[in-house]
Length: 304
Length: 330
Image 1 (spheres, each protein chain N blue to C red):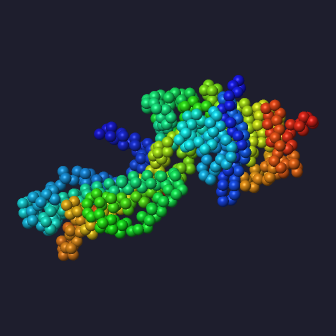
Image 2: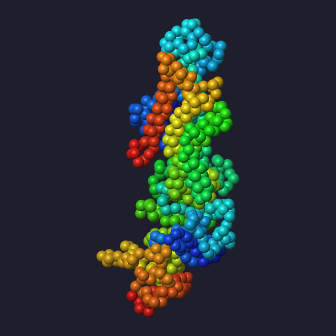
């Protein structure tokens, strides 16, 4: 415990970008709370299967007699359903933890993939300029001009359902944000003498792009990355709610919301309500932390 | 100057920037030679083309800048139009550059050791341990204390003078034949300036390197170089051994520069600024570019000024001061 704590303290007090970021988050109570909530949800997503009472997709574990029980009731075999059950007698809490796992997984994976693709294209556009720059940036304009959900809908209509396909669709609609951010940062960094100095030292172009330019362009990328993960999670929930996102065998929060929304007004609110709240809490808190990181990393806000 | 070997031979070099407002002749038909182990000063005010000359040699011109005519022979090999891969192999290895602002030339997010080692590894196939060893040795050579620990430090943990020492150490890593130093002491304190000057001179001697020291400060150059070249509006207006150029300038511009140095003016006497400003590259008059600011200018200055030679001293002027000073000593 002690080495971990001292590492944490060193990071927080150190004058590295990640140290400043950490100190900046801790300086704001709201952001600290949000970061804790995010970490808690991440932990639940990672360790979920070991924490909850039931595997909601193991049909043998379900009891149809327990279907649509309100929150807090006891089941036929004595199990306690804190958040009620759905139409198949699934424990909502267990289903939500599994759904959270899928939602975060898809959101983070597509966010990281979009970050990798967008960052690389943005760097190339900024560094080489000219026609390549125009080509990449016009594609960015095209992607940003089209509504995200519409593009994802069309893609999935053509490709069909599946986790990989949803990630592909989300990556395709998100990379442009990263490319535009990285390009503007890289255009500024490129003018600085250390790039010229690296060229005079005979350093190869890929190395200049990845070792010299990229780390200096990272702060805005981190901010956009966090906000894009949040928006990827909501986009995936939207797609799943519409029934064209993830397959029914791998339900995310969006699919859980969709499952209960028909009975939402007939008193059985919990089947949609709790997954909806969880999605809201997740996206809200990621956004709060992302906004705080933006304030910390932006030299103009003077929040260092 | 025991060795007459020519290291760098620049002939009729013109570097132009073709912009919408017209062609900017940043470097306008200059020729000069640098011998091995020679320390040469390239002096001129801002916009005279001295930095662009340095960039042209290293092939670092960004569009719209372009070498229009001329050749740059380095050890007999013409650098103009050399393929990018061959140029990269030369940069940092045989020709290195030191920049003006050490705050900007080191990457803020990489440790000194990383930046030095990648320079070693960019040209030589050696192990990382060997690269680290060489980086440590180079840091030691430029007078950085406990180099082993400093390798893991980041640029912001160094002072300005130390950073410039690091930049010099990086330039020295491959023991280049030629170092182009672009005003490397301008951004430093005066005390640090003289230390850096001393170190660079010592290291150039020690490793038999030729050095082109680009500066606007005649005072700095005077104590360092053996030969001096004065640039004005893209041309070399005067060149020669530092003693003769400074003692007996031939070009009115050089004389004007010397009169404007505080230390060279007697106490209590006002400084003599050169009137006016250097013309913008697209607005230069025909003939001598200095004519609008020159006391001696007349109709003869409207055409390309003739060149003159006295011993090793060269000038490009219709009314060189050397004759007048011979006739009527002051």
